[in-house]
Image (tube, rainbow, N blue to C red):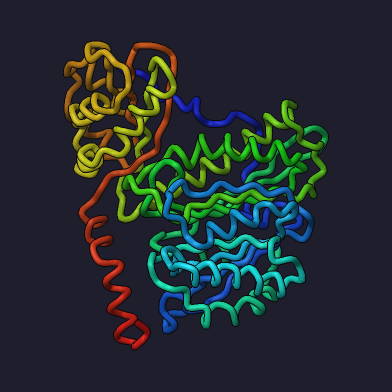
Amino acid sequence: MSKPDSSDSEPRIPFKKINGGVTAPKGFRAGAIACGIKNPEVKRLDLTLIVSDHPTHTEAVFTTNQVKAACVRVSAQHMSETDTRAIIANSGNANACTGPRGIQDAKLMTKATAEALGIRMRQVLVCSTGIIGMPMPMERVTPYIEPLSKKLHAKGSEEAAQAIMTSDTRPKSFAIEVPCGNGSFRIGGIAKGAGMICPNMATMLCFITTDARVAKDEIKRAVRYAVDLSFNRITVDGDTSTNDTVIVMSNGQSDAPLIRSGSEESRIFRCALHKVMLELAKMIVADGERVTKFVEIRVRNARTQDDARRAAEAVGKSLLVKCSFNGSDPNWGRIIHAVGYSGTRLREELIDIYFGGLIACKGGLSTNTPIAQLEKIVKESRFTVTIDLNLGSAEYVVYTSDLSKEYVDFNASEYSAAIHAKRQKGLA
């Protein structure tokens, strides 16, 4: 007995995939520079600047962690500005748990950027990513901001994507062009994230630009809609970071009609924004720290969406389930037990579980599907697990990964290694 996989969570609009990331839309420039923030002897791109040459409507979503990085606190304050024009971001240091000095350093980054660009300080948002609890080496940051402002160009997105990487193994970028009315608009984005990935939001930075003309109230609604269907649906290790940030800047330079709430254009824009965010979110999971599997967890026919969400998230975050994925073991028992403790309403005798299109559990019991066929599916680098509760019509999707021995090794000593390195150089 089989059941075809479905992708009904994917947005359905006509679009063309294009190159260019955050500089694909009209009127945006970006650049990056090497400062040696984490290690002055290693010159890799670690500071980036993204700028709109025109006024914007900007919306942002920040971490739900109660321990928030200094850059998050400063950017949240700056979001009251009606015309955000720039994002300054660094990798190698999170500027989190750094006290009053951290706030001062984050403000100094926005001040130096504003002076270099000839704009107001509150028109600049600041983001950081890297190790927590270490002061930002501003002596290696501030001197590079003005030179960085001179390096901005209309094809700088790839450099920007590289500069925000930490444990990522590759840059993450996606852009599309979407017909709308008698014209079209573009949306492009870059993201980073590999570890500390969990819903509400995932541990990541994401910067998205668009030349669509979007009313301010609509961009706020669209961003929250798209985040909920993308970055709030992914998990790698169950941890929510101190620095999570999604920023969307709209400068209205396209020839598409004004996008107002409730219009057909607003539906198109929301679907387009969802598409870009979802692709970036999937890239984050696929590039999770030392992961080998990308798994889509689909819960169907729950009584309510909350029930479906609880079940999907419990399975997606279960360490036992993730270990079985890593071992290519189609262990549906671990999946049904996670559903059982999720708090969702269920009847055990109604639960069906599928790997790919093959049923492994029917009515809460094992099926006669040959184990070799199920193993073949979970040996793939990408597959889908479908859990049918057969109690209603609600559904939910979570994107997750396996958990490998290499993940444990990679995360075993990040902080102590950084402290030892600084002490050897006489910096701590």
